[in-house]
Length: 463
Image 1 (cartoon, rainbow, N blue to C red):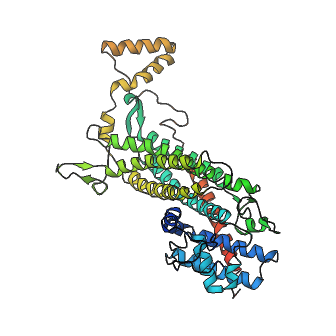
Image 2 (cartoon, one colour):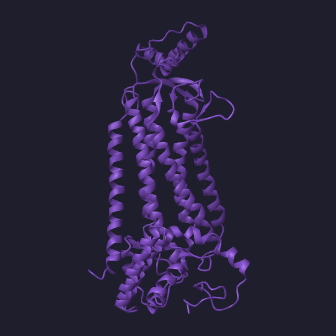
């Protein structure tokens, strides 16, 4: 029976058949699941609540038992959110721990909850519910960071600075252009988040071990209860999609990191004494253990390192998941730890960088004094074009002036006037787009919260 005790006195595993188990092998196969699975307890409780209601709807579970199960699953969810629910090493994972709790509280009803499912589809469902919430958290963080860049661009849109290519001075730029660039990049990633949420918006429950079950399961009903837009039809693809969906999430996070780490590189450069364009508040810097004068931008460097860490975690997931045959394999257990780390570290990093951008000090005089005459060479060539020269001839004329040391540009010549240029950053349009992305995240979160409330209302004895 699932609630019997094994030789060590712990709750018997869901897969146990009364045969002896080597202690060392058991510890190795369990790994870190008793710790990592604590994150999944609220989500596995949701999945189990929906499953119990579905079983009752098709006559496979007494309605009173289903209500009692849902009520106790709600209690488990509450305990988990307050960190008062534990998973023992003997229980191995959240699925066994939850069933053991239900059985201890409800007896026979608890033994019936596993009908028609496997740990295989349980974990996919719990992870998918976790991912869709964690991605909204990431979206909120990215939106806040985009807002910080937009605010910075608006406050400093006319502060001149050199624009660089090859890390060499190229053309006049502004910190408005600099800030707007990163806001725009993050807006693209927020748009991509919608597609990522859509690919996760299919319910895997009912696929069991990957081959379905010979029972009249109503998978569409379960899907609706949990707020999915559809059922993941192929029961084999449910397991095949493990790793594939994780990599999609990590590739998205890495694309965000690609945007962010360029800003971090610039911050590390522009806050040096040699550049001096920007400075961090003293509270954001650290000192040297040997050099009294040093103030170091450790927060910027560690954030840059975190972006590299995200790439490393993506590579770890890829090395584990890619190349496996069809269906379930225990290797997939090892995906959870790097996935949880990537999502948690990413959200934390985006929040810290938002604080950094919002606290930057711009040294206007240093920026403007760095804009030497040579930066205006292209602008001078265009001025000659407006006077009738071909661009190629104008280019040669200005080049010879610079070589002869007689280049004296008109620094107040017309500046670019097209959208996206320093005189037309399009910040209002960017703000409208960002506001729209935030509304979508808020509405999506509200929809899922409403579904969760309705799901557990089934077990409310006062309803």
